[in-house]
Amino acid sequence: MTADLFDAAAMYDDDYLHFFASPEGDNAPTHGPVVGTAYAATSAATDIVWRLLDLQPGMSVLDLACGHGALANALAARGCKVTGLDSSAVFLDRARTDAAAMGVDVEYVPGDMRQLPAWTGRFDRLVNWTTAFGYFDDLTNRRVLAEMTRVLRPGGRMAMDLDNLPRFLASYTPSRITATRDNGDMLVDRHHLDPLTGRFEVERTVLRDGRARKLTFLKRLFGFPELRDWCTAAGFTTVAGYGEDGEPLNIQHNRMIVIARLQ
Image 1 (tube, helix red, strand yellow):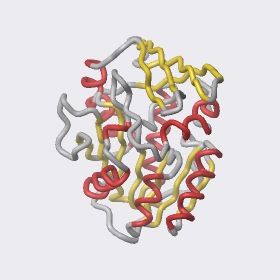
Image 2 (cartoon, helix red, strand yellow):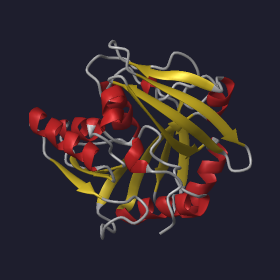
Image 3 (cartoon, helix red, strand yellow):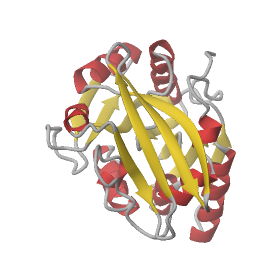
């Protein structure tokens, strides 16, 4: 296990849910790179995942870094046997509450994606959604991919949703207001891109209820050819790239969906 590059618990907390899991609707940034908001709603993301992974009711699915469970619960509602794993207790509590309200059964497990439980060959499909990969050093990021292949059955498939690097860089800004609420709460981000590591580093100021706090986080940016080669090295045999509309990846897409299959 390696040392964390930032404090994930400080990042993925109740403030995050306040801004990004709000019933108030679209929280798209005012300018700069589009993030998970490229999908109009959870149902749109679910439709794409369902089609690109060729999902069927009854399949076992791992939502790795499931967050607050929006996608995991939606897949369970369509008949999949879903397990969601995340390191954030706050997110898992929200996911369980929402699952109960929807009347769906999802196994939510606290854990670390770098070292998954003894699930070797357990899952038909694996989902890693909304830029939930690339938060460690490169050696450890590769280990996460190896863990993905370990828990998939032969013939299993993985779907990963990330920033589309060409589009992301074209809309790069040094700072932006990332999310706002009607009462004046907002997230303000300052950006730094390190070309030596490929890491996008963010200093975030959280303004909520008249109080301010700062935190930092980072994510590794990938072009498709690099990530394709990483997936192949981890044991996947075929790797394809798509955009948020489910069509083959091009420079206009905001999101890059990687679909990888085991032999």
